[in-house]
Length: 539
Image (cartoon, rainbow, N blue to C red; front, side, top):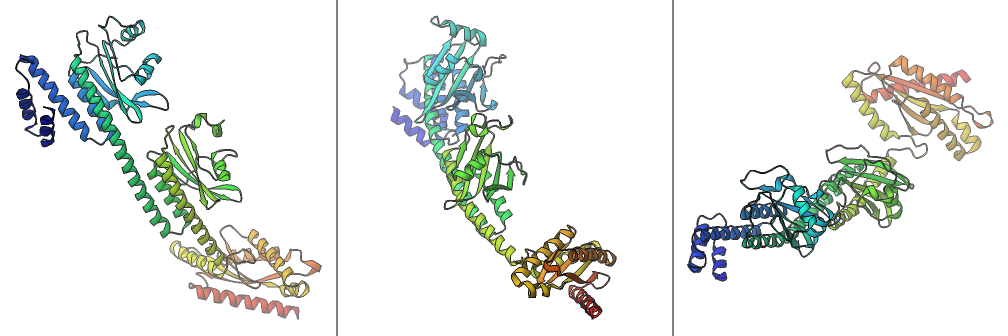
């Protein structure tokens, strides 16, 4: 009989128009007329049909939440109870809780207020009972009820409290809680057996669903890492690299709250990037604390997982609003830590082993990408920097000057270009040698840089020649600024009473010229004239 029934089920899909007729016809053919009689026979056959449809549908589901929904709904319908809900078991907190309010199922009968008790309010004895028993049933009509069981039913207004545990190979995952408040409600033995069968089927389906979910998560994680690799190898801009790392970290960790990156430089952590779940960027949650998570990760070079910030030693004395879980991930090149990434989650015990494994793989790629971007940035800065004075060089100055020209044309601003040459510097080199002359040159460069406005741009062209861009400065303004620089340089203390001065030539956009080459030429000519005048006056 069972083999025959299985063949019929295999040939039909739930929802098929022939489903009900085929199953009922089969049952009528197989049962003897005197097994079940009259209306009772019809009710029994209907319940069997419901059971077969339920277990077949549940067995084909792969979504954990849909399995829980289907099992609770079918048990409620089969038992004709007022309420049924799937409660999930939290092995960490050792408490039961509904996944969400939408998974409480009601029969067609009118429900009474408070008939479905809040699992968080279950007494300790009941919590312990539900966590260990496969089936727990408390019925008001049972004459063997203990005093505490009777008190519980009286307090909650229940006449039935039925718990059908759902287990997998990993242990208890939850169960179906069925309740009723009607004094006339009666639960048949065969209905209880059918409920157990549905719960057992749900447990098997949930075990498979977790395997499917794990496999899907791993596939998605690997795809994310592949995308990370493509992005990180195609960009050398450090900020873009950091933002991409954080973006993919939040993809890997579902419902994470935020992710931060701090670079580790000279034993100090420097904030570089942040990304929040709501899309905010560049806003740090807080600065790393000495002895806190981020510094501990940077100095140990090891991943640190904090399952609950409220009771972890690294967060003693932290603000009360700091709650949930957080992971600190070292970004390392071999054994050298180049940075730390933190990922925070609003829930406690939120990070799985698979998620931590994916984060480690992301961290390995991130560290290499960060180092490449930093090296590229260093080489780029060196190519644009005068190595003696640390000032921008000719290349960097020309780029900045081109940008300023476009800005002035767009907004109708003026600016001035000044070419500077030191007077008397050759005497310093002749008297003390070039190493000492380099020291004097660096000193002069520092004083000029400190004396100009923040909007101005100073560069060294070579030898003792400098160029200066005076932003939004007309001819009159630039002359005043240059006279002040002459006074600054002439006031510097040079060994043995040697004096170093400064000569300059200026050209103003757009009054003197509109093209950069013309501005350079006019400023250089003005410098030549001023140098000639100084030489002539000394003769």
